[in-house]
Image (cartoon, rainbow, N blue to C red; front, side, top):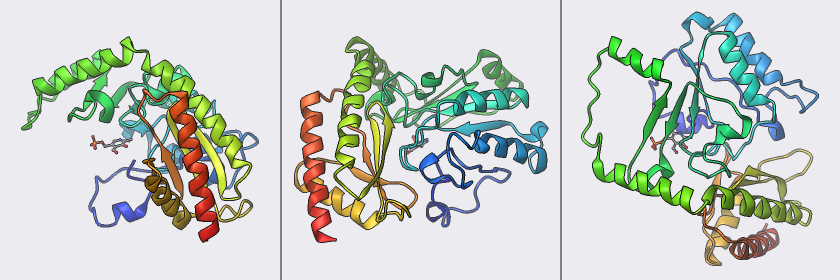
Length: 290
Ligand SMILES: Cc1ncc(COP(=O)(O)O)c(C=O)c1O
């Protein structure tokens, strides 16, 4: 989450030492200059190379990853990536830590993003939608990992720790998601919305890629379809035009070139249609301006 833009890190130093970042499988812009699927998942091989060269597995506590990157630009990995990552972590005796802060609680059409790949992580981070707006975060880990804590008695304290109101809100939120089958709605309406946006892409040179799962969808804008030059200014203008027409979206991605579509999980098809119309009109307005 903090590795998508050096801009965000530059004034926050020093950060925790001993952390090695590796490329995420961002197939639309592969940083290893490969193409999927002919790459054979070079990004997984690269992690093994890092373990063989600069970060010995004995000294690596964990691999932290988002099952679908959000702030970096709504990037779902290719199908085999997450199972391969899990295998690599296990083979090297390294814990797999799944950051579900953005992708958890139905956002991607399933309760937790990692479930799309049937992989069990060792540790999960939870936050954001956990209590639907009331501050709440959590770490879930295997029993044997949690039990290890007692061997390292550290004081876990904090002003807001164990807040009963937040816990009640979290329980209510989880029940609401389950009782109203909001993960299913996220999957169905999300797929419908993504398909409509993919259709829309045919009419706009500005749209380079439409991707996502459930109601976590990204539209990456480019100035040129072949060179894929990021269209950051255009993306900001689309956000402004959409807001003027009553639709709240935002920009994300390393260059700010991707539109983030993450509506409430109760979105209906009719509302999805209205959103597509607004995005279409906003893109037309920006094409005229630029
Ligand atoms: C994937 C991911 N992990 C962690 C965080 C940090 O969460 P918090 O703001 O609850 O510390 C964020 C925040 O945007 C995030 O998107």
